[in-house]
Image (cartoon, rainbow, N blue to C red; front, side):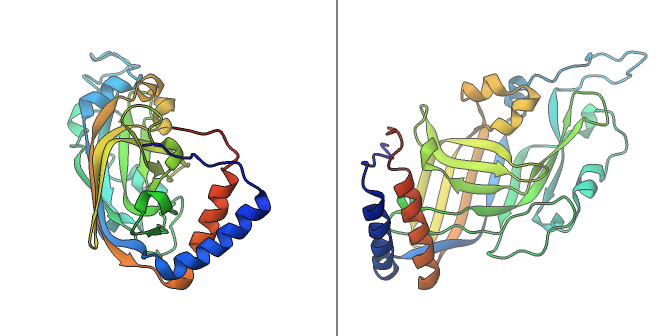
Length: 284
């Protein structure tokens, strides 16, 4: 897909055109957002283990560290959207009988379901960054008009093969969003990305080989998962840059209309945003 082929134009004309165009959009387009549904992740634990470089301790027990057979990274706990009231500390410390990695602590990373957040959410407890859904688009041109992000409720806790107590990391309070600058940057890469917000903002997963289907009021997105740059501190840079696939995802939600006044504002902001990029290098 070729994108971002915008000519260099006069800033005054671009801003004026964006304002006029946004006013037209408010009456002629089908402004929409999403409501309900969920994102489901199916992570390939062997591909994740192979992609990170944190296997720092021996895989046989020793006198100083009597733990055996630990993978470099594995899923220990999954909290779905019902845990939105838990603090960062509660998510990190909950159900942790010890600080050592035990193979028996691992849970399946398949079928992890993150519910779509509403347009408003309750205040976040300490250390949490759960986000409301701000996604808006013209249902006649989803990828050409998408703005904002889809908030996703849920957090995973991972064990890393490093010395405790730094061997637990959280990944969650995520958003699904569309970034056209990522579209087709490498073979199979889409503009869809999943961003982590708990602890710090970082790319959680790059999305590849994506199919997007909008039929009536149903939006479905499916594809493969790759490492986001947030995994780089675990040694996943090489796997990320090689676009290694580490699982699959599916997303289903319901499309609902956006009030005209809201879409007028969003469209105007989007027009100014794209006009600011018209002077940048063409990407294909």
